[in-house]
Length: 488
Image 1 (tube, one colour):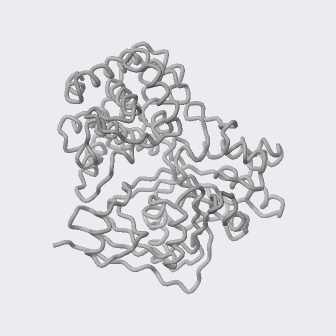
Image 2 (image 1 turned 180 degrees about the horizontal axis):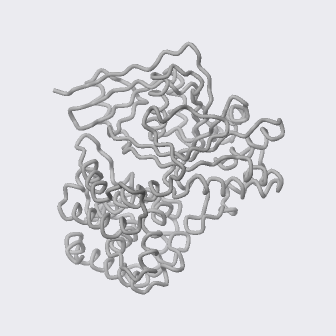
Image 3 (image 1 turned 45 degrees about the horizontal axis):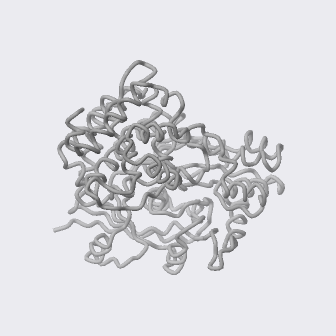
């Protein structure tokens, strides 16, 4: 018999929007919005309602939430039998700034910019994924020749991207004499605050050097680390919720565990998040790097190897004995030694807790979802740490096997002959490399390791690493997953 704790949304007399969020996806609704709902219920403070906007896709979600009075449910699963069912009401407005039905970039964009430019908005948060910042994954520089960024440079007052929206809204506030809002990235990127500043300032430089200087000196860009497993919804999830009496097309499911570490730099004020367990710290970097390399790095390792073997979910993958052994070895032998953590952080216990979370039988976190956008994720999750180890004369065989699996995964067909779509900004480039090199594994691996948007030139020149990736690729493609794992 399931144990279900049901928590209704708070009923506030005063509703004010103090936060604008860019990226109205499942993670935002299951993470930041939950913290704010808990804060509102505990404090009675109605000043920090949220306007959440989608920038490019999912207009149906925006309209669906609006039709539902911006109420939705979050089901938090400790396991398949222990469930906390929360109703969330902290989102007060939903907007869509993408293309309308006629393909025009017009719908809600002006309303969103007006909301961001309002003096009532004191914080703008983002979950737009790594690619939404338009930064080169290897160099960290703004991709100024991307068509979307070119559009924002050419028509800065009709922005299409998250950096463009931030620049235009900040320009309006500066012109009106309104203090700037704080920009808080909640995406899985190292130094996400600094990287967000980089994208915004470099884009602003194309428009007005004085504006760019003002943003660089006056706008706070604190970093953060977020952690909660939020799988994409499935028909099974909706069916399970229906059994609990919830028929909510906007609902999300997630694990019970949640963590948020935030650099405490908010000149215009903030909610008292610490009362809800948010760790407000002076330096997020150690926690951020720990999560990226251990949790996210393990997820990517499992995603590419598991998907090639026809494994569908994280739960199924972590119960594959050899894959589970690989994950623990990767975390403790290749990721943990690259971390410099504060006193009292036990990385072995952290690794074991991650494996326990992966084994939550109530979540269907699909490996294909995790495998998306690998070109944007792998530099932070694997390759920066691997280069550190290479510079110290140390090898990274687990990452080498992961890179081999990623290269093979981008062919769009698993080891069993099943086809799938490769969801990545560089997917067309990957397809052309596979077509050009065919079964010539040496040339193919060399071509992938030469993609400097993904692999730094320093790591690409490391012979030990490149040879390890090639050997792993040949073993994986010729003999299969179990033999490739055994070879380690």
